[in-house]
Length: 115
Image 1: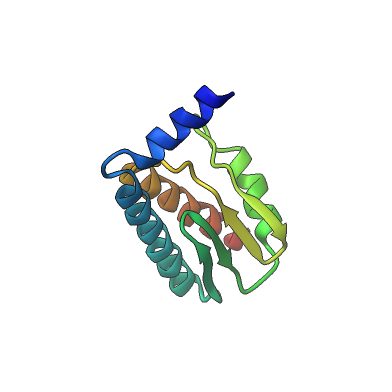
Image 2: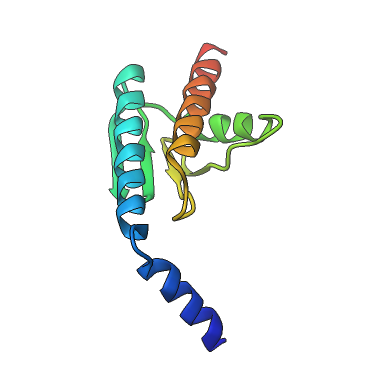
């Protein structure tokens, strides 16, 4: 068990790791704010990479369900309330993965809201 703890600490303390995680958190926050503005939502909130999109209506569960059907790669979302979508990417997420996720989310919101 101690070896696992040391390995986690080493990863977190590696040069550039926290800077990268903070940059990805900023990227995610800005992307969610852009989607919020595009769809007239109420904004985003959270800290670090744990973010939430605060929506203007209760279509979160429908968006989560639509995300399950994405192929070949799904999008893991959580809607603890109807008007809230939670995002919890891995701390080593890449800029490209954030961009892909935001693009998928944009398409999901659009398709659910057109239905």
